[in-house]
Amino acid sequence: MTNGMAHAKAALATAFLASALLGLPTSCARNPAPKPPQTMPSENQQREKIGLRLISPTWNLYRVAFSEEDWKASQAGDIVKKVHRDSIGKVVWEEDYYYTGRSFFTEKGQSWEFLAVYYDYTNAFLDVKYVGQDRSITEALDTLRTKLAPMQEKLSVADQILEKWGIRRL
Image (tube, rainbow, N blue to C red):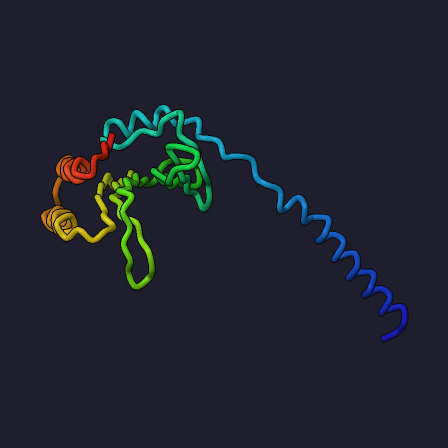
């Protein structure tokens, strides 16, 4: 390699390193807080008709990643709703989370007990999911799935479970 080529390579490497370092502060800067979609009022009307928890104006849109919004009822609280949108911003599915505050251990480590109400807008399908160790809850939800229970029956069972926990769904 000639002296000129070595000098050109060194200059190119230095320029590359400088541009990478100069770009670092902007790429690590904190992104502004995500903004709730402007369609929220009409989406809440749809949620109300279905029987899902509304997104309150006081809630915090905690994070938006991979077309999913994570909502918190309070700044320091847990995520209480996840909303997945398509490429044009239309809601595809959403899931509401209700936590008991109890935890348990599995082979994967510590888990928290919660109930989730999942709704798929594309297929008008509702499901109630449970993470925990109460077999009576697991069996009740399995029975609903086996008999293909209607949506209102599933919501009624979710309300009964949450009532035992001292939590209101809506």
